[in-house]
Each structure stands twice: as structure tokens, then as C-alpha cells.
Length: 433
Image 1: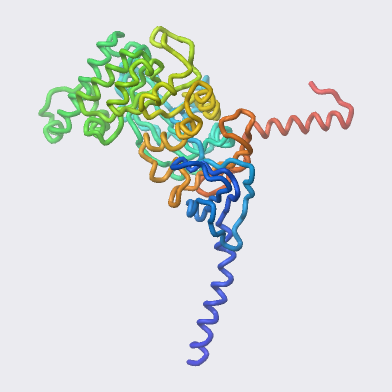
Image 2: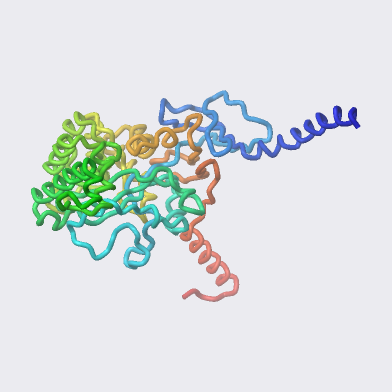
């Protein structure tokens, strides 16, 4: 029996390796011959992106493709990272007018309510109909944010694929959200000074709570402006570990936000910043990134009188890091149109692409895994039949975590259903209602 073992086991091992080789290659995808926008350098003409086990393993012109890999011919196409939408309620809302489908805010609360402990993560719905509608347009990653009150709560970064919430999560929490200016409503008595007073009170109380937690638990401290859970949630903010996203639009409000951040040493991200171009140099000096909505050139209220299409271009020209958003959920798929309009009004093309890929990933602290095409990154990759920022360009392939997504949604299913119905009616001579 001994000789049999010494010869048979190596032979069996060799057979198993040979059998396994094709199976291993089945998980390998090579996207070949396209113009590859890595977002970390100049576009690569005739490049290849090699994907294995959900990660990018190689990018370049001379990439060795293993035998048995699936090959996608991208000649004449563009290949980019999946687009990154920086301000949505994706997975948190279905039908805006039906309260039971909305999980992005706590209802029936005072306008000045502090809800720092509110975390949207547990409300995410991986089966939301909004998700496929968004990802078939090339958007693979999004920030889902809370709203309402003076301090709204904590947002999350998600990939738009997965059967369960943990499958989608990229980073949670990603930031704390608050609003100043007109968007703060009645917070602080309805005056801007009152709103800033309330925020300063909250930040001071959070510092005191963090220093005297043991005394608080014994009931040996004064009353604080927020609950225990809200103060606990604010501690990473005052320690500079969790960004504070402040929505503001008027130039004077943006300056007030910059003063607050400097005073408390906060890691600040500005959201909205319609009049950001007026204070672009100050934002650049403070190294504060801005999330902007490009398609906003008319003043919808008094704090947006300075709205203009070239806001993103002027901010970036001053050295501000800019991410572009639609600031919507059901139409988050239009983020590339926002970026395209930014190009039309002065933002360089590659900068516009970066504003919906690598810059959001850097702003939200996930650039080590998302936002660019490089070895080791999560394989969120899109193949386009033309320029991604042109409206007539269509998506041909979407990969999230290396898995190809079907290019179908509830909308495409309804389109095809009624298209077939028309064909049936024509065949049998019946009219349509």
C-alpha cells in the first residue's frame, strides 16, 4: 500500500489542480481595448482592466490575461470607475408622498431638534426600486444622508448592490449632517445668529460631556442641551474624527461655517454652497471640500441670489476640491448630466469626471477602495459606448464588486411590457386603451 500512496497522491493533486484551473478563471474578467479613465493619471488608450475576485488586479496596455478569463471587447468604448453620487437618500425612500416608505428623517419633531444619534443604516432597503434605476446609469456608489432638524444625524456610503444591508455598506457612519441658513427653518428662533448659537452650545456641551462622562452617569453634571445618545454621537465630530456636513448656500453663511469649523477644529464639508464662488479663496485656504449642484442658475430663494452655472468651475479654479451631486434620489442617475453641464461652463472634462469618481471617494474617506481604477481597488467599473458626460452615451456594462449588474430596472421592465403589449395588439388587430 505504501508505494501506491507515494505515487497516487501527487497524481491526484495534479488532476485536482488541472480541474480547478478553469473554475478559477471563471471569476476573471478582462475589459480590453478601451480608453481607460483611471482617475489617477492620463487616460490609457487601448487599455485593459483585469478583474479577479471582486478586485481590480491590473490596469494598463500590456496586461497578461489568463486563459479562460471572460473577455469584454471595449475597443472604441470608454471605461471608468463607477460614478459616485455624494448626496442622496438612496435606499431610504421609495415614494416621497407615502410616509411609510421614507426612512431618512424622524417625523413630528421640532425644527430645532438635535438628532445626532439618528443613524440611517438600519433603515436601508437593499431591494429599493430606486437602486437598479440608478445603477444602470453607471452610478455604483452613493452617500445616503438624513435630513430634518438642526442636526439631522449620520449618513452612510453604500454600493448599489447586495441582498442585505451589510453587503452594501462601504462606510458607516460617514459624516454628521446639520443645516444653517434658510434650510434650518425655525432652529435657533428662526434667526441665523440663533442657529449658530445652538450649534455652539451643542459643541460645547459635547466637549463637557466627553470630559465628565463618569459624573454624568452619576447625575453629577448640569443639564445638557441634547440627550445622552446625541452627545455620545457628537463626540467623534468635536474630536475631528467624523466630518460635519453643513448645508449652506449664502456666502455669509459659508463664512459663518468656516469660522465655526476653525473655532472648534472641526473637519468640515460644505453642502450646496450655491454662492460658494464668492468665497472660493476662503474655502480653498481652509481646505474645505464642497458638494455642489451644478444645474442651479436661478435663485430659488433669497440665500441663492448668486446662483450661476459656473460655480463648480470657479470653485475648482480657486483650488477647492469639488464633488458634483444632483442632490436628489429618484434622479440621482442624472449626476453625469450635472458633470457634463459643469464642463459646458468651464470645468475641464477630466476634472468633471473626477468630481463624480475620485474626489467624492477622497472627500468621504474611501479612496483606498473606491473612486479610481487601480490594482487592489474594489472592481466598480463601467463600460460606456461613448463619452460618459454626453447625454446620448449609453452604459454597456456595470460591475460592482466585480459582479456584473443586469441592465434592467422596474422602469425598463414596464417599458418592455407595454412595448410587447403594443406588438400583440397590432398582431391581432386590437386597439390600445
